[in-house]
Length: 75
Image (cartoon, rainbow, N blue to C red):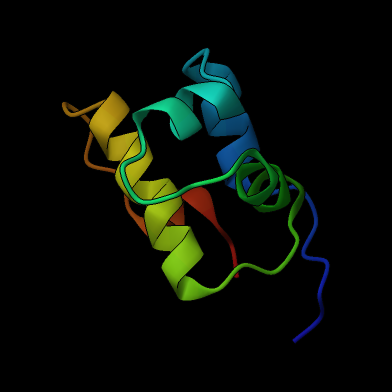
């Protein structure tokens, strides 16, 4: 699998929701880093565990929305 996947749906979703990388890092209880969120937005390969950390943080910020990994990543 290539390392670069291109800009991910996560990037547009965070912009749509007016959320920043810092918002996700601040709400996360699972050691999520700014670097990991930025990699996720830009399409660098993330492990399934790291993708789940981002998903969990986003769900914590917007509990009324039912996000899935397919909403955030296209790989």
